[in-house]
Length: 167
Image (cartoon, rainbow, N blue to C red; front, side, top):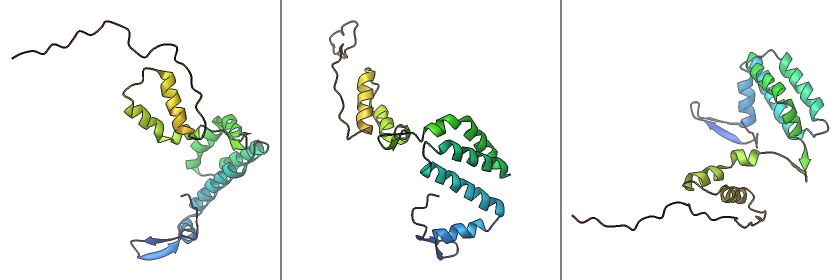
């Protein structure tokens, strides 16, 4: 659950109660110590992802992996192996260019690309498709125009004129 405002109140339909999100989380975490540990481990990974820098990412990453290794929660074992397998890529994701972290997140979450492909009825010119996708993602950046070296027209036999059949 992404909590933007832990003080926000929500209604619990079954009990007809209202409580804050923070209180709801606190109540749910009282169910078991393992659930509480799992929640705080998840939150520590989120905090690492939000606050680490390229300079301190490797050290913090190693500490985090060690914490996941020693936690004893079997559900996190696959996640720990995923962290170990993608270590280089995760640490490199903290590198900043012009003040922004480099990521392909725009491409992955952008449904505009899927929509373009869906309504395109098959682009025959990849450069045109690529340009349209880049324009839909980077609306503030100017698109550098280019002159197509060839035509879009399909080369082949000319079509015969349409002859209407009479009944």
